[in-house]
Structures are given as structure tokens and as C-alpha cells.
Image 1 (spheres, rainbow, N blue to C red):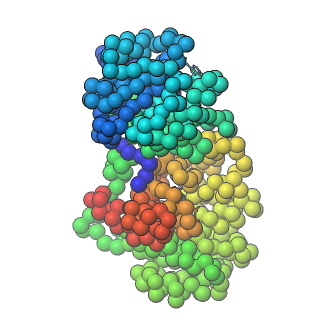
Image 2 (cartoon, rainbow, N blue to C red):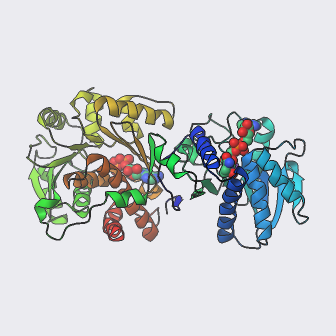
Image 3 (tube, rainbow, N blue to C red):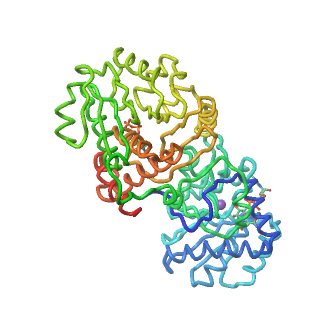
Length: 506
Ligand SMILES: NC(=O)C1=CN([C@@H]2O[C@H](COP(=O)(O)OP(=O)(O)OC[C@H]3O[C@@H](n4cnc5c(N)ncnc54)[C@H](O)[C@@H]3O)[C@@H](O)[C@H]2O)[C@@H](O)CC1
Ligand SMILES: Nc1ncnc2c1ncn2[C@@H]1O[C@H](COP(=O)(O)OP(=O)(O)O)[C@@H](O)[C@H]1O
Ligand SMILES: [K+]
């Protein structure tokens, strides 16, 4: 359901274009020749294409002059050898290729069954079985495309056939934002080598990638282990390292006490969903602090949770209990008495806390960021983030600002988005790749608050709880979408899928 497919990846680091280049060079220095590395990369692509397309498909491989183009020539040869119909398109006026691209160009020139044509001829495509392979530029792109390339890409984008980008959709950089209205090849599939690229994970750039597959080309493991980066992908391998199965000789005290605080007249559902999510994530004891108007609703829908009334229709105090983890915000409302209750609570509270929704809005509106306790987790969506910390020009800058604020305040920021990012006080950024647009519905965030509160109260360390929590939330969302569709799935369906995710982990 998610747009990502992970093969065997040695590490879930995300590197910059320069670091990937270095990694390629180190791999080559340590033994494999660059031409053989290109062969390996092309082989991985050709095998993937063979598995995912049919012999009646015809491949139009559009090649640039660098190593990305070299990949394209090698892929064309391999597809031809597998029995596919293949045509190759190049810039007929410029036959200067990188050394490895030149070797692969020479090889296809000797194959009479592969036609080599000028870019301009690709527009005559009229075979609906055609598939375009984009091997124009990869991570080597380092400046704006020339008008010729822009025209070519605009026209390719208009051809209504599937498009596969090799390594990176042409026009995107690996690690940074593009200018607004840039021309980028709109891929249906991106076959990328070894690493996710940051540009795949941000809304402005990720929308060009289609379904992403990371192919393992066995770049140097030692280099990858040692190279320093602040950016990571949350993959299932990491989750399996974090997940702690329940011990047989355990009891309810082993699994922590969560207190979910929120709800107001008309918004009891929000805190109900948080509470239910905390229980479904395995909490030993779960309490809800909500106004009295929510008592019957909460007690009858969730008999396992304990109710603590506060105020008639709006919360007016938040009592502090020992040895509990608090998740505050869902459906809280914006009454003054509730704001006072929150500020009083934060002034004397010491333990871990998750702050969401209106709790964040209260802090933003009153400029009370200093009340956020150290090691707190805050879960803003982009607008809440902006209210807290100010405007940024794009989502890359938003992550940088979040890193700065997480460090300054010594807190964890979970920046919610299609690819939610966990930003730690130590400046690490973990991008989540589970989840889908079926979750873009009021209530999904309330579920996340419940999951996080539950995991932290079960003594997952806070960083791990954040990483596990966003992954679990998205994975349950993916299972809900699989069963009900992205349109019809509800946050409550997502809650009911949490159990299935745990079953898969066990
Ligand atoms: N040995 C290696 O280094 C490997 C590289 N691989 C492939 O090689 C690609 C990187 O290759 P390259 O570094 O040759 O770079 P590209 O093929 O991405 O780009 C070619 C060259 O074009 C130039 N250029 C950059 N921006 C331009 C622009 N706007 N207009 C015109 N020219 C521009 C740059 O000098 C760049 O090096 C990867 O994305 C991947 O597809 C793979 O074959 C795996 C192994
Ligand atoms: N397009 C999407 N893809 C993946 N996840 C999404 C998408 N839209 C929303 N979500 C997830 O759903 C949740 C929405 O939270 P939020 O905006 O706080 O909603 P609410 O407070 O109304 O419940 C977040 O965890 C977010 O990451
Ligand atoms: K490409």
C-alpha cells in the first residue's frame, strides 16, 4: 500500500549525492571495476523490469551522457537479451559520453536488433505497450536543466505510457529542493540504487517518484556503516530490533500506565480514539481524563479504560499521578479554563509527556514554549508546526528548523506528513515510509497520540517509541486501506488493525 518496496538494505541511512558518489568510489577502489558496478546496477534494473512487465512491452530507453545514461545503455542491452523489443534514444548532436557510458554505448551499437535514434524521434511513440525508461540524469544532476532537456521531459511526460526512472526521476536532485515549477520527469516507478534519497520523501519532490524500489547493488558495507548522516529511513528491520515481545511472566504493572487527557463537548471522539489506541498498543493500565459529558460515552465504548472527570463540558484541572505517562491534546478544545489547567500541569510535571493538537496551539498562542518539559514529544502537523516555530519556505527548511528547535528545547518533534519525520534532540531525522492518504482524515492524529503514550509508558525509550509509534500507525493504516480502501477507511478501522501489525511482528 505504501509507495515503497524495500529489498535487502544493509543500513537505513540516507546519504547526500556527494556521499553516494564517495561510496561508489570506495566500492570501486576496493575491488569491483566501475564498469562491472554499472553492469550490476543495470542487471538489478533489468531483472526487476522482467519480473514486473511482459514480453509484449516495448522499451524506449532515453539516455543521457553520464553514468545514468550508461545504466540506460546496459539496461537496453539486457532487456534485448531477455527477448524484449528495445529502442534507445540519445542526443544525436552530442556523442560525448562518460567513459563507462561510452563502453556500453559501443556495445549496443553492435546489436543490430536495437535501433538507436535521436531524442526527437521518441515523440512518435504510438504503441500503447510502450514503456519509457528514463536514464537521462541521476544523482549527478548539479544545475538546472537546459531548455532542450526541459522540452524533452515535458513531452515525455505527455506520452500516456508507464515511465520507469533509473536511480532518480530526471530533474530531481538527490538531497535538496527544486525550484518551484521545475520540469521533472513524472515517473510511475523509480528504481533507485542502494539508498533512499531525501528528495523522495518530501512532498514537493517526492510526488514525481511513483512507486519506489531500492535495489541492493552491494556498495561497500564498511563505508556505509561508518559514514555520518543525520537522516535515516524507518524500515521493518529497525522496527524488529526495537519491538519487545511480551514476557510470559508479566502482569499489568509491567505494561505501564497511560493517562490520555482531552475531549470537550462535541469532541469526546478524539480522546476516545486516543484511549482505545493506547489499549490496543498493549498498555497495562489506561486512564482518560475528560470532562463529565464524556463519561457515559467513554465508559460504554471502552470499559477497559478508567475515567477521571474534570469539568462539566471542558477540562478544568489535570491531576498529576505518579508513574504514569501523559498524552495530552486530542479534542481538548480552546477554553480558557483548559488552558490554565494545561499550564498548571506543565509547571509541576516531571515525567514523559506527549503534547498534541490544542495543547500545542495553547503553547503557540501564548508563547509558552518554555513550558514544554525536556524529553517531551510533540506531534504537530505542518500548520501546528508553523504556529509553534514560524513559517519556512519549504518542507526541507521545515525539517532544518525542527532539528534546531528539537535541540534547543531538548524535545522530540514528530512532524506529521505523508512521510512523517521523527526529529530527535540529537538532531537525527527518521523518515517514516508506512502510511497512506486514507489517513488524511480527522482522528488519525488522535490515534498516533494514544500509540505513542502507550509505548512510552511500556518503557520503550522515547526515541524508539517515536520511531516504532509512527511506523505502527502507518502500517495499521496501510492494512486498513488494503481492506476498506483509502477512501472508506476510518481512523477507527486503523485502530482495529493495530493487532494485525503486532501479529506480523511476532
Ligand atoms: N560507478 C558509479 O559511480 C555508478 C553510478 N551509477 C549511475 O550513475 C549515476 C550518476 O552518474 P554521473 O555522476 O555520471 O551523473 P549523471 O549521469 O546523473 O549526470 C551526468 C553528468 O551531467 C552533468 N550535468 C549535471 N547537471 C547537468 C545539467 N543540468 N545539464 C547538463 N549536464 C549536467 C554532470 O557533469 C554529471 O556528472 C547514478 O545516478 C547511477 O544511475 C550506477 O551505474 C551505479 C554505479
Ligand atoms: N497522505 C498521507 N499519507 C500518510 N499519512 C498521512 C497522510 N495524511 C495524514 N496522514 C497521517 O495521519 C495523521 C493526521 O494527523 P492530524 O493532522 O493531527 O489529524 P487529526 O488531529 O485530525 O487526527 C498523521 O499521523 C499523518 O502523518
Ligand atoms: K534518471
